[in-house]
Image (cartoon, rainbow, N blue to C red; front, top):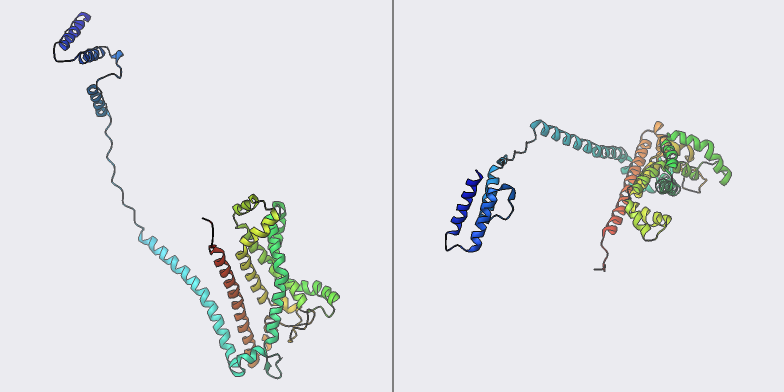
Length: 374
């Protein structure tokens, strides 16, 4: 068997040598290819290009056929029921927002309508600048109550805002988690204390202290400032802490990288960055102070007179409305509705003023600086 194979190989080699026009290199390549085919163990990567191409074609033919790409499925459309639900929710949300705005408008319209008869009779200017309030003489001037409200609100903000903001800074930037676990629940509990309870605290505790310090009976603006500052502190503290916590940590790290100390970073970087949130917290605290009734009624003195000192009794718009609404009638009741309308406008004006200031500050912050480097 081997002899026959050798004979065939020999004859093939002789055949390759036969053509006279073939070069010696081609003959040698042909002989080598025949030897390799005869002995598979000696196959190498030295095949001629034609043989290599043939092997690649055979390999590709043996491969499994690639499955055809499935056609892209169409996106499933939202069902009709889902569309109805989403439209219903959008309508519900719109109705809720519209009712909130409508409620404010209706309240103001009702108060203004009830106050219009007296204001049209004596005039708005005379009502605003009048200094006498006498039911017996049918004389109603709102200036003492307007000034009293501004005095009480301003003093409570002067005392309460720094205390609340510094407490928020301590909780956000300085205090340990263990300290926050004690301070935060105490502040939240203080926010839930009813105003009448705070008023009792003012009458029993604060009034004697104020009386001993400044003289008099102890009822007056100073007592109201202390009581109201306690009442607005939880609101301003909580919202200011949220504003401070919203500042990214990268801003603090950048300040530290510039060589600033912790206190310099808090005072010159963190607090200015949270300014808008602190202003919003002050707005809500201001609304709480100017609308507070029971606590102010118990400690302010309720005297319809102009401001004469921190220890002299005065009255505010809210306390006067509550004090006299129960037995009022006719022009007297109309005058009280006039006080309510003025209180409403003052509240709206304060909120609008602070909002405009915050908007201007935001525009200045976002405005690019001129002459910057390339």
